[in-house]
Length: 305
Image: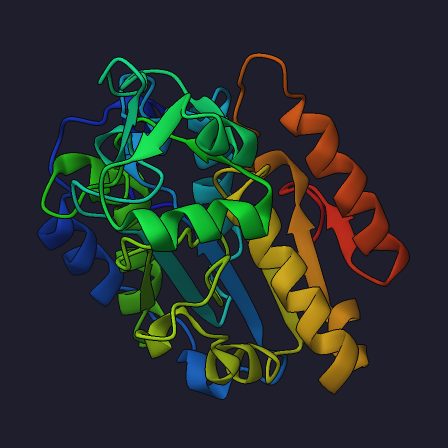
């Protein structure tokens, strides 16, 4: 059930403030079953649907993300009485971060592009082609361990509009929360400047100085209590894919049956585009492997039950 003020065109209007009061008033007028009484519990894991990724003028826009977001929002409204809980992650950075141009300089003292992704290999550091100007020892070992990394345009910087969930999705989460009498859950990731944190459950390289970069088994175990787990968000090739991989890797060891509960919304996510790298193929190949292990690949229009 969509609120009366919702319009599909709202999804591509990134400048308005969420109409929280109006959405809340309408949701309170409904008589839906409280989520706590659901006998079949369905969780929706919404990854990084933030302005900087979804808005085409954002810091790191993902082609296709606006339509992905519209389908996800209408999935929420269309299955309001079936979705038990919604968890939303927020990619969260400060101005200096290991994968931001502010961290790096080339041999001439120039920073990488602030508008396009830059591929950076360990050989680039060894040769002096690119050097870290912050925490050089850690950074050099970090890239050596991974082999390569991407330097991204600034995005999702805490305190900026780009960090916020897109307005129409914020409204959908509020509507679900109030109508079903349940709190939404919000997770932040990426606040540690010394490591990448694509997946929502742990950083790419754990920082021994920060327990928050280690595997968050509490969230994983909490998610496992549901009968079904839907996953969507941005970008399919990075934060969504790594979150999926982290879930599958964890549950393969501790609770293999949970993998069959994971439903991936294929039409509610898209891949980053970068010159010379087919991120879409990489993501789809990995998802095919996960499907062979039990993950269910679906579309938002498929019946939920």
